[in-house]
View 1 (spheres, one colour):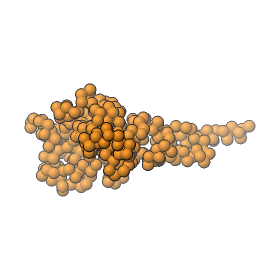
View 2 (tube, rainbow, N blue to C red):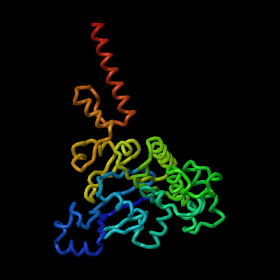
View 3 (tube, rainbow, N blue to C red):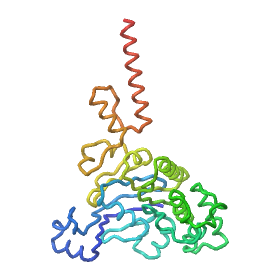
Length: 309
């Protein structure tokens, strides 16, 4: 599914924001002030089928507001969101898209509510009208996809599980609806380092299987290592959009909106400033290690050549 944002602006004040804009108060109202009504301003971009799009931005930049537009949970004050060319302003289109776009909020385990794991995971498919004969298979497959055993957990209360298991159950509830696109708001927030890495690897696995992924994260390292493109928001506007190499090429510009560079990219810059002959380019941890090894190899070869002379 292709998701398009066309000049989307959103205000939590709804029609009042439009009145202020038309009356010439736009400049005074837009900005970082607490009473500024515009959460998004003239946002245009496309989520392509099968891509892994990262979304970054400081607190209050509009990230959570943006992703709530992706399945029609909220609608633009101005502009349009289109799913395969159809506007989500249509109730029927929005209803269909909610089954195709799985939105997972930060700390999704807080939304668990059913008496058993089975009923919690089954809630989404049942609400979509999936025949009851298919529900058990949906629940079984969803739990297995998040690394949980159906037989061991189906009858247990989700509130008796560990925090990490609860998050996986909540995630399984979204996967049980068989979404084409996963939209994730800080999916690894609050997890310990091992659980965090496992969870992110699981998400990368879904993407490798063909699921479109949109992931909000405060970690530039995670976005750099996993995403094909990164969208940076600042004060509700698109500040940057491109490949990780393009977006993280200008550290000073990112720092101007409160964001840093991925650790390998920052370290590579420090090495160059110190005079280490490191090639230019964008680096993940693995790429940086290889680049350092190549630079050291060139230095050793040059010294050996000089000694032979």
